[in-house]
Image 1 (tube, rainbow, N blue to C red):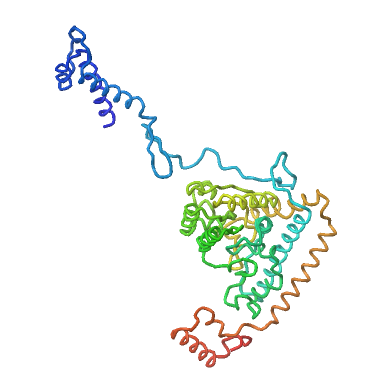
Image 2 (cartoon, rainbow, N blue to C red):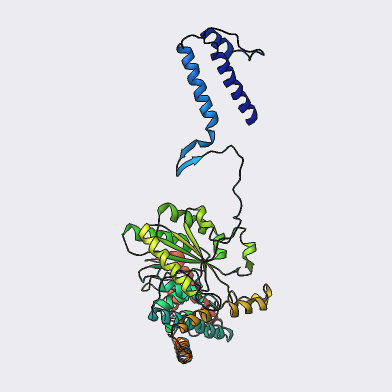
Amino acid sequence: MAQHLKSSKSTFLNVLRHSLAFGSPSHASRHLRQKLPHGGPPSIKKVSPNPLTRLCNTMVDTLSSSHEDTNSQVMDFPGGKVSFTPEIHFISESNEERVPCYRVLDDNGQQLPNSQFVPVSKEIAVKMYSDMVTLQMMDNIFYEAQRQGRLSFYATAYGEEAINIASAAALSPDDVIFPQYREPGVLLWRGFTLQEFANQCFGNKSDYGKGRQMPVHYGSNKLNYFTVSATIATQLPNAVGAAYSLKMDGKDACAVTFFGDGGSSEGDFHAAMNFAAVMEAPVLFICRNNGWAISTPTSDQFRSDGVVVKGRAYGIRSIRVDGNDALAMYSAVHEAREMAIREHRPILIEALTYRVGHHSTSDDSTRYRSADEIEWWNKARNPLSRFRTWVESNGWWSDEAESDLRSRIKKEMLEAIRVAEKTEKPNLNHMFSDVYDVPPLNLREQELLVRQAIKSHPQDYPSDVPL
């Protein structure tokens, strides 16, 4: 069809040019209605151009120009000018080369030549490393407590300590955090105490959630850390809304939300990305791409080059970072925060890391991945040992400091657990409070049924829960 149209247009131009050679309106009009003659045009006396001849000349020039300049035409479409092409060309499903990963330290903790990073003071660097060690030790002890039957559930952040602590260090206390469930290090950096962590995990009356949440579902109004929600990716649209509010109020702050590679398959991820781009909301999307969504590998999660390339589809500036490199994470988040607030734009950060621990205490990851793979990541790409090497190379850390820190944190953790276990549980009525100002009839009926069941079967209910 396209070839036929092209041929017809060419024939029309030839007819028009041939007719103009006669210089006569009658000849021109007659030849426009007839096919080209096989012979050449008859010899005639050239006459001055008349109106019809000038019209025909204009048509020839216009059609010739259109024919020659098709490729240079553009369409002024919402979003910008779109050029045309005569070729059938599909955008490739992937780039020839994968998006590179930004890093500052190599696997041995040595600074790469000519590396670009935001300078870190001794005070910040030592606190970053100390909190990474604290987070790891807290996970160790809480995990063992769960295995002893003292906790109902737990999830560790093994292998992802740098993402937690370094990102928190690069943010302002005024930035609002919308976590998933593997970012307790952000709270730790902001001042959440080991006792507060223990209170939440044991669900006692000092728990800010009043025992309603699963362990590791932390939250703190004081520290601008929204309570963890177990449902995947629901925090992402919430973060965009909060960011837009900060922008409207002219605050020097942004919203920051964390999610895993599995969360990028949820509809909320795509809705949030588009929402943020269109509303130009100052929000940081930090994806912890740790290779696994419970037992689902990234190869079964998406066919794209990870998560970083999804940002461009929504018009969002993006970067891929070595999530086990604390300096790289700190620098990337620091720069992203500045851009988000200054330019009123969302930023997507894909942090490549590895979930060294099981998904949770309900999971046995050796059933779907090898122990050798886990061990390799834990030794060859360990974020703590890499950052410690760099801190020590600056003369800011020593074996003695390491020993003192680990000894102190162990004592504090054991004491926090002892206190949390002895603290009274929240009253039963907290199951039904804080949602409605005046509880509706159906909720009052449910509370009555629960109390009747406890009274009838007291042996089936914990005796340490006040009624």
